[in-house]
Image 1 (cartoon, rainbow, N blue to C red):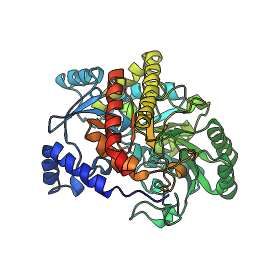
Image 2 (cartoon, helix red, strand yellow; image 1 turned 90 degrees about the horizontal axis):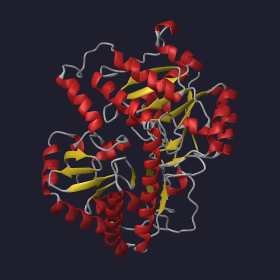
Image 3 (cartoon, rainbow, N blue to C red; image 1 turned 45 degrees about the vertical axis):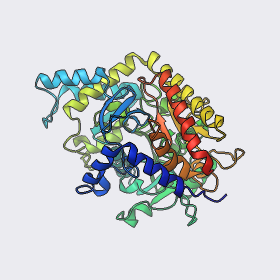
Length: 466
């Protein structure tokens, strides 16, 4: 199937958006004078320009042009309670008013309390904090290499573990050059690093066994997400994750579960517990910060101690100036305590909203004659999911099981699911990035009705070009 040409439609949508949001457009021109592409995070800089946000509350945003936007991006999927929940903002405001919350550069009680919660809820023995998921995954790989004395890293095609050297391979699918998920995604990364990164297929136990037979005695770690994020919003199968645990133990390889997205998203703890799998190391971020920059590496004491004095500190995991920042730790303690105490109500509600959102998305496009496949849930593994990603296969009969399927431009309409739909929905008052998003407890059934109508109107814009 040839990729459809959406150049005329995109031009029409961009012109309509420029008229719709002139203030955001003007700010983009100003931003271009000082910042590369007008911002500091590539994903946020949608074309022709991003909405510039002035306020955010619950499920909704307001931009510079006064438009209200129903938001499913929710702070890179971090805001499980919605934007600026009073639970968090009130605690932070009181702390700042009382003379506490900005950087001190000292240890305090809060980071001990947050570490205790993480250990208790995830089965980890030791925790160290940093400020981003990227740093957490980088430090976890450094720990694995130091612990095993090996240098090779195994990861999943389509798996995103941040912009760090061992992770910048096998992120995007490259069909045209025949490389699939085998390409290095960034200039400036040493080949000495990426040549020792092996990319395996997600949810393919047989290929995983083959890779361990070939590379097992050279591998320091296998890093994977129990819920694949950027690669398609799909959980690992139970068989796949158990195979990963079995093989890593057999070959003496450190199993790292990247739970930056999954951690505390499906339960008040790690997603690995839903599989009955305890990793050697795990990384956390997003949800655990309550809207503040918090990330963590957690795991076995004998590995984690390599950053400490008792282990001779061979791994320089300092965490950064703002690691365990007082305001961030206060937000983390508040959100984690809340999720633990209200687990029985928060997660069933999120699961219900997620299921209704996926049904709404599929039915809205179907009513306008467009078939959509919505990933984000697997009832065999997860008791409920608040996540979704839309895929537009050219043929409804095409099986979609892996990133190699839905990111293959001969199988699925990638341009539609990324650029076209993103802009068409923005004109209808809905923001979701690259056709994916997550629900928060702040979303309502009325919001889902709004989403459905927005999708129907967006589909009517798109349909003549299919």
